[in-house]
Length: 272
Image (cartoon, rainbow, N blue to C red; front, side, top):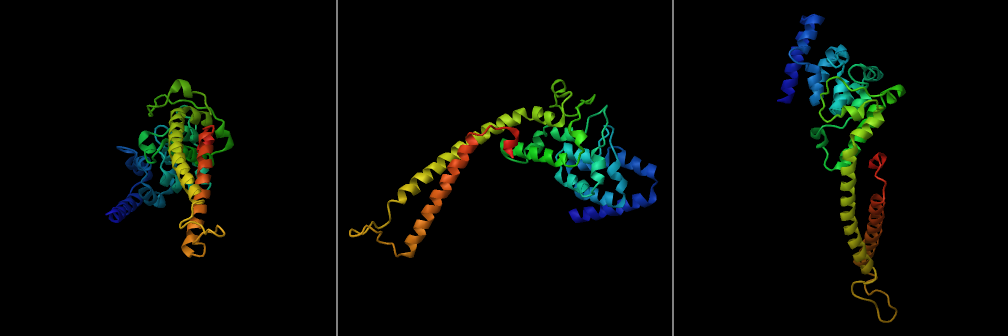
């Protein structure tokens, strides 16, 4: 069904490109809704590939807030659409640096805003959600110029995102905006990590205790004459010893790892 749908779209689009003028084509795309931006918003990269392949100028189209499909993809955390524009090479840098001072600052500010609960729910656990947000910010940061990293945020006149607080976010750089917008997620992620680390550390400690005791209590006992294990020459005994040592080493490593998590600063960078 999906393949047939793509074929239908391709046939219709080829007809549109060949038969309609540029003015008519733009009107068709923008009325009654902005077709390209809607596709970018929901992450329909296959649909955009069909359209852009025949009409590359679509990547430059902006909505009434001066956002290109790249801006919409970044705002809605659509990796496929972002990757599609990213593959265009140097063109993605030019598109990313489009901005309107009266509407919003730049694309990196969009990446710095906290994602909607719908997009955050793609990953379970607040700590992993925070990690995903950090990785997304870093990826977008790669395609903007250095001057955009220090640009101050100017809130739009009509905020489409209800969880953006105008009084706290005004005049912030993208990184400062990211920190301000993700305060709650950072706090919840810290609690989630501590609870998870505590539970896992308890299990690792129990395992370490058992395997440590097993290392001094050999199956079958020891020989009364020289004190060597009775099953020393048995291959199964060798497997037991190796498994016990491996379990002891790995459980001890786990304890140290979870201990380092518990003693972490829980700064933004630590969630990488």
